[in-house]
Each structure stands twice: as structure tokens, then as C-alpha cells.
Length: 282
Image (cartoon, rainbow, N blue to C red; front, side):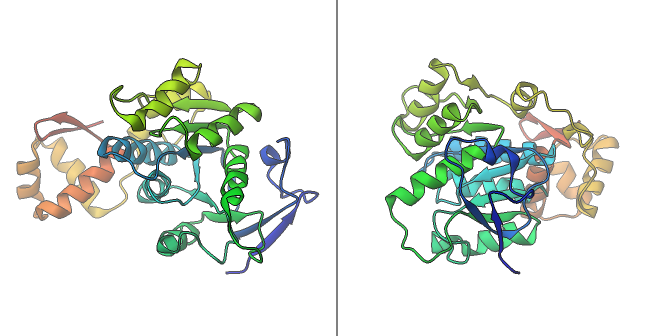
């Protein structure tokens, strides 16, 4: 796929990014620029299981609702946000510190390819000729915030790259949101401090959609089945099979296949977990 260069003066250059104090003079794009509203989800490179869970959930549900998820392709929660959006069948954009042909970190080349293959994009203001340095990531963070209506910090230390992105969100007059966490966990200090300072607390995707006053015809509760397996499970739920054990037996899926399917169905709002292995269709 060919890399496209968008100069600031081009009409295709993202309007939101054009508004920020120091917009990039040009953007190099591999893939498709988003046509739906964007929300950034960022967090620590060393997340807890809680951080991974809430990031994946929010990214998947917001992507299923029609929002494009923006993040920085870094290890940790950036990658989880991208993957959550992809698994929900949505769009995601990765903003890179280096050129779009030189994916960094190199371990995320496969994820980058998935993003482009699923109508997302890799974006950078760098043509790839210069070496990546610490300032490259700081500059990238302003673009992550600038492309987005809101920035959500799901889990981060008090001083981190995510905090820098949050600061850019405030400077750029974007909505700042944060997921509350365990007060004894250092990786919850960042979002907890942001909430104390006025960030919108997020405990579910509806909090984000309501804050943005965003309505969607692709409602989470009425999402169309994405596969034969999903349609089968919804049919079995309608027949009164509600436990994981009963659904596995009646569907002839293996336990691992069922776990994969039901997890994605929960993320995209088709089923609700009642606890103790019990499920209902939404």
C-alpha cells in the first residue's frame, strides 16, 4: 500500500488536528484516514490485568459504537486498545514516533499490519529519515490528542507518557477522561489524580458516549452477529441455555472456542455476563 502525504493546506488534512497550537506541517499516512469521530485511549507500558481488561473492553465497545480508537502502538495498553478495537470489528489509528514504514516498536509490526488491513491507518509527521529519540514520543503524543475528541487514560503512573498526552488534551481543549483504579496501585495514581483535577470518570463505555453526546445507529445492544458461532449462541440463549457449560455442550464448540466467541460478544454488547458462568442476550 502506498504512503500518502497530506500537507497542512490540503482539505483532507484532519480538521481537529488543524486546530491545535502546533499542528504538523504534514502527515504521512499508510492506510485510511478516519472518517468517524476519534477517541484516544492511552496508558502504561506495564499494565495490571485490571488495566488490560478495562482498556480492551472500552476500546472494543467504543469501536463497535462507531468511534475510531487512536493510540500510539506502544507496548502495554496502547497495543491493548488497538487490539480491542480490531477484535470488535472497528477502526483504529496508530500514531508513530518515527516514519510509518519503520514501525516502532518492531515487535508490533504484525499489529500495525492488522490495523492497515482493517481500514485503519498508521500516521506520522516524520518521513522516516531521522532517528527516533525521546522528543519524538512527546511530539507524537500531541498528535494522538489532537486527532481526538477526547483522551481516556485507563491506567498510568502519576508521571508518564500518558500524563503528557493528558496535558496535551487540556492544552488543545479536548475532553479528558480517566478510569478510576485501586488507590494502593501505583499504576492507578495517574488516572485517579486526573479525576481529582476534574477529568471525567469513566466506568463504562456509556460514560464516554454520553459525555460526547454521541449517538449511534450501531447500538451496542443490537449489534449484528459477526459469525455463525455468534448467531448460534444467541439462538441457544433464546432457547433457555444460559450457562457456559450448557452453551458449550449445545453448540459443539470447544471450551477455548466458546471463550473466544463469548468474550467478543460481551465486548460488542451482544451478551451480558451475570456471573458464575451465566449469560443472557442483551
